[in-house]
Amino acid sequence: MARRPDLVIFDCDGVLVDTERLAVRLEVQLLAELGWEITEAEIVERFVGISDGAMQRAIEERTGRPLPPGWHEESTLRYREAFAADLGPVPGVVEVLDRLDAEQITTCVASSGSHEKMTFTLGLTGLDHRFAG
Image (cartoon, rainbow, N blue to C red; front, side, top):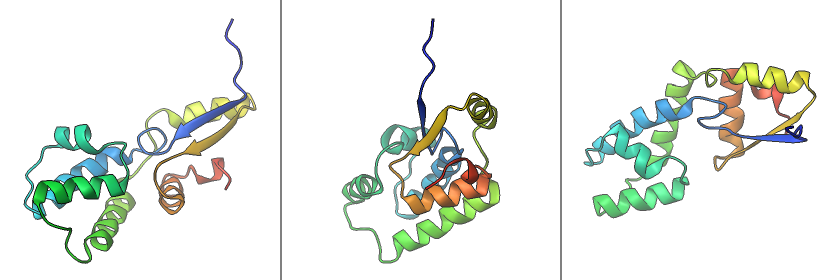
């Protein structure tokens, strides 16, 4: 017989909110602008789940130069625009959260992304009220 969990911890990106699909598409464009032609599959293989700092180091190593001034700000703006236009919850996650709520099982979010990013993406998808803090 399965034991009832006391707590369920969710990753944010790709588990609660469908950011990865949009981010991968945008990263192909951003890297092409830096001279690195890369496929969506390669983006997933190299970058999904790593920190922004690790991604920056990999980009700079591959292109042989530092990222241009303002690149972080510009790319952040473009991510926000893409998410605002098309971000939704991962299919089925609302039903899972409803069931956990009904069974009074505590949930929380863990992410390598910033608190500000999680607040933004959870807010866009209407999931923010389900997670305090």
